[in-house]
Image 1 (cartoon, one colour):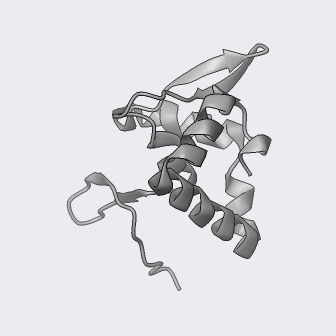
Image 2: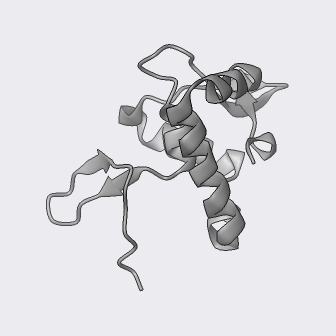
Length: 112
């Protein structure tokens, strides 16, 4: 799934996922989302992901350029290594009540 998205440090991300059970579980979750929901999959483009992280710098996800094109940048440090998998899983929420944004790993769709 991530092969369709430009990620500077892709090999390092792949190794981190293979060596970390939590990251492996998160990426398996993303794979299920993509396989089960084509609409969700259509939103996971490099252009859209980079635009999101540039619009919301508080989530602290780095970008860079690969072959002259913007990309996500994987940071293998312990405090940042989970950020791209969380981004791909859309682990962010916005409260209409308090107008605050949050990271959250478990969501229930209320739009239906």
